[in-house]
Image (cartoon, rainbow, N blue to C red):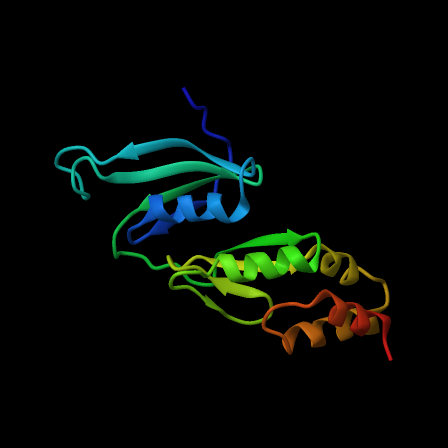
Length: 163
């Protein structure tokens, strides 16, 4: 029996939770996630009996739950998952793969996948840069981010290093 973690993001999809989870596991690759449980709707339930109600899964060590809840609530940018990327190649790969088949790039390092979930594809170095004690350096980095769609580490580094 799977024991429920104390804190788990619960993501409400209109439909397609199982497909979304399969996409995430494929995007992040073998060994980076797994389905831990799938529950199906029973008789006299809001969903069709036997169809997927929720999928519990782990992705990059984070437990998550994907729920096929119907059209009552819609995902928006008020909730997103942030991925701290090690290098530009990882940023480029995730930038292309996450919104595939119906999603779209947004701006400032954000993409939306085909199910409506927003992702922040951010270089790990960004988090170090914005903790710098020099407010001018931090401001230059943010100014650079606000001008980009997909984040570029070299451009952020030049902004950080200054004129």
